[in-house]
Image (cartoon, rainbow, N blue to C red; front, side):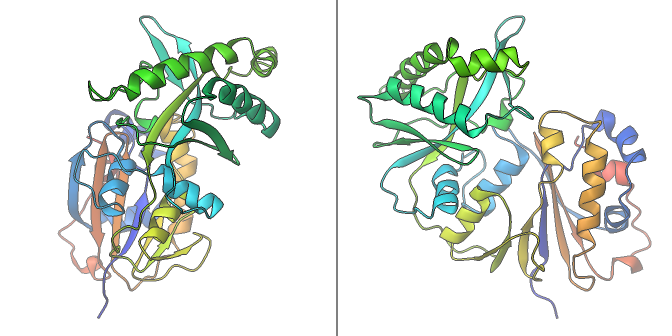
Length: 337
């Protein structure tokens, strides 16, 4: 008698409905095809103001209601640095490029053009000169940038992935809080200091997009989280590892042997999906399918597939091969509609 299903979180695994047929035709994914052919649907919901993977993580790792934004940054910081003191409010402060669009500034990620250490340190130093005298300081750990503030700021901006390709607007705050206006002034000063910075001059000369803005999200203070329904969590993402540790779960790399009653976080298709690089998506999904072969064959599996604005969940039972009346087509099962 098995306990809970092995939960596999496959972020970015849902392509747009209008492209699903063409993309799945090029997809070499026998494991997913076999599982989904006779799996039972569990959940299918739309997401507003976030992304599918962020909304699922907010609900199932942080215990938040639909629409709430999870304070992921302090948990990512704790996983990366070991600092879980909760002494300051910590935000993800993702460096981005904003470009002039037809009617507004458009948010672009730095995919393939992340700053090297020297570039990052120089831009962060310039930004911190602008933040001097405020209660904020920009820090980084590897490729991850964070803003530490002495006091909580009453803002709940969406995660970066939710606004990629959209107009760049700084987050709102409560009318009487003023943090959004304060951050707007500080951010404008940072943008001005970066505009003619030698790092950006060199990046433009090299054909790389200048780093000309920051996106704050996931702000909060570290605190213990309620126990998860999985005793083991397998993930290579700092925010997932940090949240799992704060909830008392045993945390492992996805390269380790998967336990039965566990959450396995596999966002292999997310880099392509987040920037709509659908030409690279089938190869990422094919590689992901090879990883799924590691799942125990005799254990129930909960498949959670997400895209920017959808979550679809399926339950795969070891006896599903007997349910001959179920014949889900892979394209229909994966289409985000």
